[in-house]
Length: 301
Image (cartoon, rainbow, N blue to C red):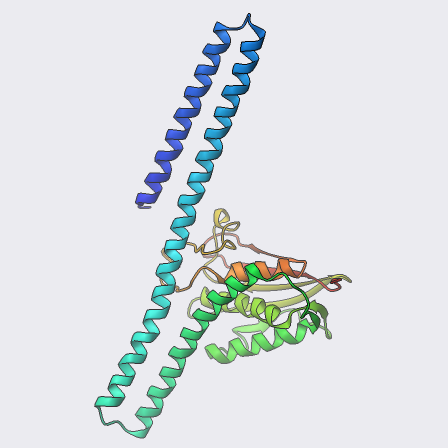
């Protein structure tokens, strides 16, 4: 793997911090050796050098985290720029063609359909960015209501099939809910979380998706939504990071998959806001993934 300039910067600051900590420890030992008979200077020296060491460690950790956060934000900006620029460029090209050339009615309708697809892509990117911002700031639960979660899952599943032109065998139920599953929450937020999870599975399943959606009720107070795919998979080292804001797995297999790094962050934020959580499991790259949302069936506002 190619070492980026930021990786070198991180390595430099970690090395520098380690050297400074080692120097502080060495000076502390010298101080103790020279003042072991004087209790007060020895105790003060231990406290003083301990504070210096702690400060150096905290500063190094903070600096490395800031460098990584800036790298993720740069990746996010690049991804969003591409996601915005591509449909806009495409729309401009279609409009110029419609303006300058004489086209048949069928050709015009074909262009209109492609332009609508581009506007949907553009709108989806903008909505995802806005949702990520709103979810971080939203705290009120005044608009919560009783929600049929099984109906939301069914609606999102059918919509994903229609949007991607998938047969029922490519995106299907594994465990079908036996009846309505009522939750207390925001229906739009829950719909967003479910849709993002299904869309993510489709996106990373390649040209021949095999996705199974399970809605389980392991207890009277818990509901689980599991979305299982046989797609690209995720390495164990990445499983804890993929729900972070702006984070995207960087592998040769995922380079061609476009995204903003916000979808799974939105999913977990919504799940936790509703008193649950979201997590992922995978046996490794190329072995598929299972994403799970856990929500309480009864949640007191």
